[in-house]
Length: 158
Picture 1 (cartoon, rainbow, N blue to C red):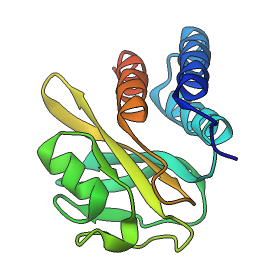
Picture 2: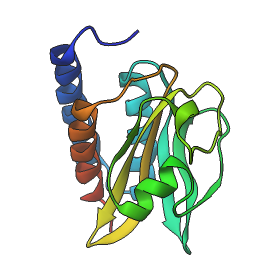
Picture 3: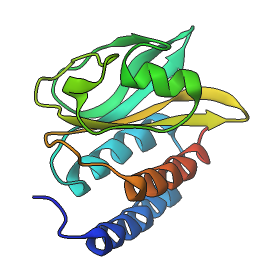
């Protein structure tokens, strides 16, 4: 079930940010926060088939806490949507993954994707990766709110 309009989407995101702030107030452990964060995204965002994190370690992205089906475990920088967003350090929205030249298929149910780089002190920490089962799920509203979501989460990284 998708949102009816942008206002409904914005209200859902505003609530999501408040819920994220509440979770972060009661827990300081990075892994616990990533885990609950992926669950919150999965429960809140309609049509989600994957919501999770790839963490940058020894030159590549390695699968971290997530909600969804079994997924790719290692992604090289520049490869796939996650690797592209990580290498450019810019959020990347793909409206139809089947038409994206550099797409890596980890789950055939994914149709669109948004990837938000996680940058702390100018260093890549990882990426937030969210896939939808519908084409065209993500836009500038998602980008704005998910970038804020990641900023909140990064405040707990020590």
